[in-house]
Length: 135
Image (tube, rainbow, N blue to C red; front, side, top):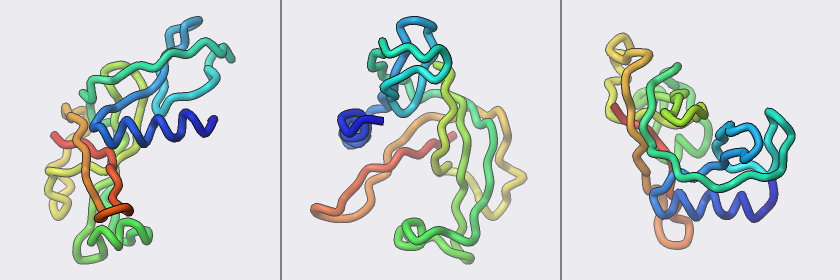
């Protein structure tokens, strides 16, 4: 992925937008944006803003968090939910699932509708926007 697409991805998240790409040749959509279509190897891709609506395809409650999530306040006593969401437009995205009871994972349903939301973490120059989904 080119540096331009990488920067555009984070800039879009900072504006609370979900931007990917669509191949002009075969019509497949991707998130994040890609410079080349992995389906047909075409290079004519256009930016597309996704609705953020989708359905839960898979999830896992995480008790042993990586460093970034520990810094966000998650640990064995405060787990979080990682999810795979299938967007209405087609792509599948991995992101945190918020607004669910991680202490009762049986209450989380595969196939339930979800909507993108954007989380702000950090302060000042280290502030970043992260994609998440919620029911």
